[in-house]
View: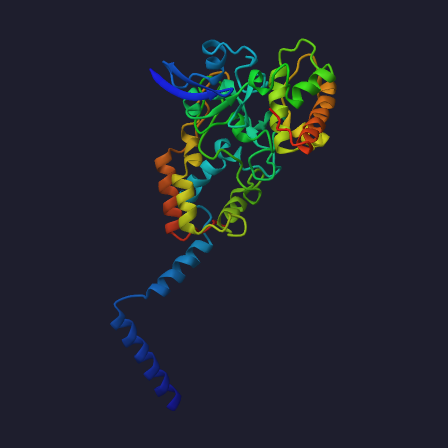
Length: 202
Length: 164
């Protein structure tokens, strides 16, 4: 009997506290959202973002074998060009030997500011979307970037934005841009991070 | 019209072009009449058009003239003289490298940049950095000449002689 009274008092107190709070706390809301997202198998913002990151305009410069790729068919860069020590090629033959800060329509050589390979830990070729997202988010592989810095890199960096203005190739043929517009991509990136940057489970 | 001021082989030049994206190669050959730098592929692939912009090897067919504003350009004509050849030119003569010769200025400019950055290049350094194309396949003699040029350059440095 004594136990029942104590239990009644505790439950009453909890009821009063919940009623006076005007709804679930932020903490409870976050937990609920995280639990919901743990079982997330698809996320439109994530999928849209990944449609861009896995496109050859991005992927060609995120190799896992230190060899930059070229073209819509992602063939290895001509003449055995490779990463080098600073992601910029070799001592006397660097990316900038041929690539300038903007596309060259005479030669068909693409260009954008700081043209270079993504650092080796940010190699994505051959990885699935979940593995790419894990590398993107981990400070150990992403160069110590915070979420805010990642958003800035993905939505404002001129080299990233080059993907939507890739120019013409050596045959004068337009390079294929990513399948999602620049604006849609930026929105998807911001939405995904805003929702906690949760990687879908499948 | 766009005006671009630059130095070519030590001489100040002001160029007027209709298109600011005109390749530096065209300006060098057609406007300044320096024919040593060659047109090969026009796609920054073969390296025949290699020259130096502020000391760095650049494929001039893929370099818009607007980027040359205020820069110092060196072509094969400015690398050395007949009386005082650059170590690369001296080595090329000693090893009798050229066959038809068309691509050689590009190779020599690329080599001059290499031995500045890597004074004692290994075969691997050469393979990585000298990626021009020679249809006469003079690669074997070029490799010997590159090692010789590096040796001459180091000798000059030891004697306090600056490479031209």
